[in-house]
Length: 90
Length: 90
Image (cartoon, rainbow over all chains, first blue to last red; front, side):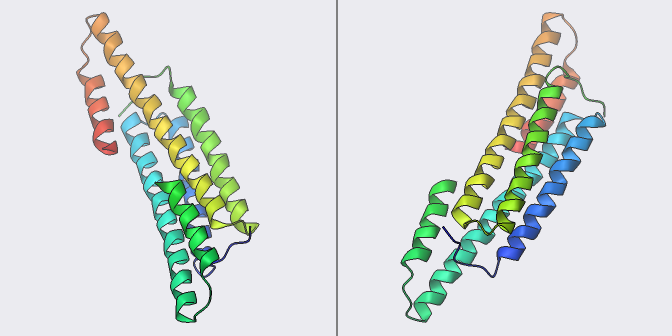
C-alpha cells in the first residue's frame, strides 16, 4: 500500500537516522564496559525518541484527514491508515 | 562507575546489535516509500526489543544480588545499581 500523508516524512526519516546513531552509541558503550544504569539511560532515551516518531506519523495522518475534509475530498483511506497505526501502538 | 553483573552482558550486546540492524531497516523502508502502518509496525517491534534488553539487564542485576546474598557478600553496590536502573525505567 502506498503511503498517503507525506509532508512530515522527511522529518520522520531524519529522526530514525538519528536513532540509528544512538543505538550504535549504545553498542559502543557496551564495548567500553559502561555501567548498566548508563546503558539503560540511553535505551530509555531511544525508546522515547521512537515514541516521538510515532507521534509525528500520527500528526501527519491526522493533518492529512483534516486537509481532505477541508477540500471535501474523501478521507476513507487516510482514516484507515490512521486507524491501522493506532491499532499497532495501543 | 564499573559495572557489576556481567554474565548476561554479551546477550545484551547481541540484542542491541540486532536492534541497530532493525533501525537501519526502518530507514530503508522510509527510502522505499513504505506506508506509515508498516513503518509503525517496525518501530513498535524495536521498542519492544528495547524493553526486552532492559528486562535482561534487570535480571542480571537481580541475579547478582541473589548470588552475593548466597555467599554472604555485601550487595549494597549491586542493589544501588538495580535501584538506579529501576528509577530510569519507571
